[in-house]
Image (cartoon, rainbow, N blue to C red; front, side, top):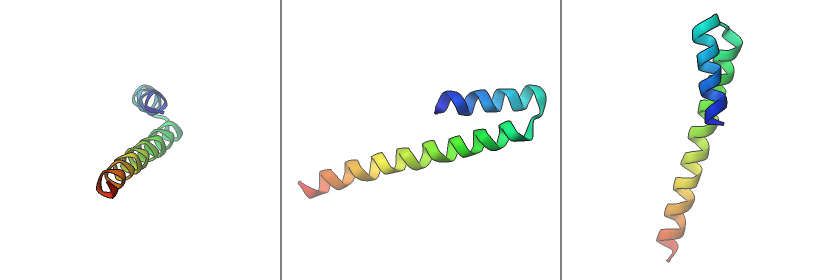
Length: 49
């Protein structure tokens, strides 16, 4: 996922493609929400014990 985001940003920087920028932003948002989910899940299991 991170690779796709970086690739999208790189292509956007080189070609100025709006589509690649949108893809990169969507991937970044997905990564962030996924990381937040892992963090929440981790703390949920910690407090449960």
